[in-house]
Image (cartoon, rainbow, N blue to C red):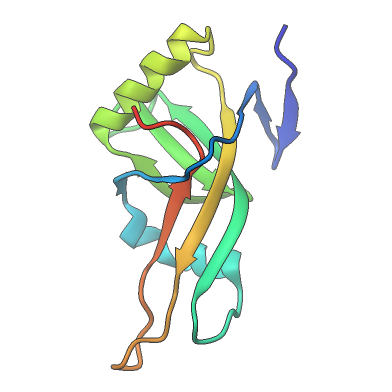
Length: 133
């Protein structure tokens, strides 16, 4: 039996146990969600951030662009989506575990935000503690 727990008003059916390495996946929309990343990391100074957190992986069957989409939220804020191919591969992995349609969670790391020479900051990115697909 799966143990379900509530996270930011989302019920997660499964927690992907951490693996030794965090993997950087090609996320769709990561650039457009930089404001969410900034809110999540708050003020971290010029050197950038390396913040461990919990990511919620949410299937979006009604997404207007891709009915197989997997949205990634942290603390209730969307930070991106799996690429089209990764979303399908992730759904296959979930199917093998009998988790189709279920929201799951995994450990994640937000990195970036270093002050650059031109006075701007580098973009934030997300790595997940799950095996590559």
